[in-house]
Image (cartoon, rainbow, N blue to C red; front, side, top):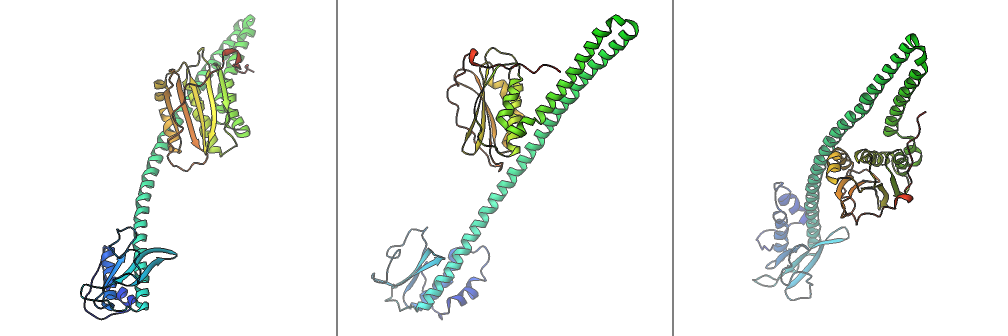
Amino acid sequence: MTVVPPGVVRPAWVVLAEDVAPLPAGATLGQRVAPLLRNLALAAGTGQANLWLPEDPPPDGVANAGPGRPGVRAVAAVRDGGTQVGELVVTDGEDGTAAAVPAELLAQTADCVALLLREVRADAAQREQAVHAAGLARRAATVEADLAAVLDVERHRLAGWVLTGTTRRLAEVTLRWREFAAAARDEPSRTLATLRELRAAVDDLIDDFRTVVRAVHPSTLRSRGTAAALGELAASLPRRVHCTGDLGRRVGWEVESGIYHATAVVFAAVPATADAPLSVHFSRVGERLAVRVCDPAGSAQRLRAALADDARLLAALGGGLRCQASPTGAALVDIWLPQRLAGDDDPGPPPPPPAPHVPPAPHVRHVPPAPRR
């Protein structure tokens, strides 16, 4: 920007107050700086006043110019703190040599330009933060909706476990009790047999309730961590399971619980009986906890559909659940969560390597379910 108007030279701060401050809020940087440059050019007589900014292409003979160069009469760095953010240069004009510009006026003008540049950068930062805040608000709304939907699914799932299973078991206990009462009254010889059946029905009811309670709030998860709790759960499955790896040091309860319950749902979704054992690998890379379940007998497509709600929950927490087929056709399920739930999207582990090696059956330890009490 270069101007040489007639007029009276004023202190730069007066120009800032009288000419720049009244400009509308939408005025550009060029419009705001122009009065200061006109005032500086006026002090230079027939000279020209130029402002160079680092992000702009430098004009010929202006950028990094020094007073010793032909046509350059004065140079002043525009600084914001310790950082140079621009440069004022006074040069000769087309009509003759520029007059000497007072050093005080040049310094004042540089300070005023620095204030304007700081204001422009602050406005830009505010707009950027507003855009970022709007994005976070949309993300929060999405997460809130996902959590509400998943909580509703979990509520129905738990209600199904408690109500359906318990109702069925209670009906069985009621039937066995009636048979025992009838035998005690009418057929004393069948009393012991019906009592054993009643006791078995009660044991089944208690076992089912314990299974639900352990699935919701396993004590091992609290005391020993996710890997130990999942190992205990795997030992109770009717299918062989081979666990490897480690999740490292303990993290927050909400993270450990999220990993545990997501993996437990995978255990429930895979076929209960199959010759090939499940392979479960725990890992911790950077700040992410991950579990990979490999089922040679499973279907990635079927698991993806069955675990859709759980994938949505983990995504809302900043992690994820991914189902895909390995090169050998095995179903691979990756589960991951960051060690701190910050709500940021996590793309998850890298694409899986070739299917993990599963030790032969003699090396896979199968722990049968605990006997009924």
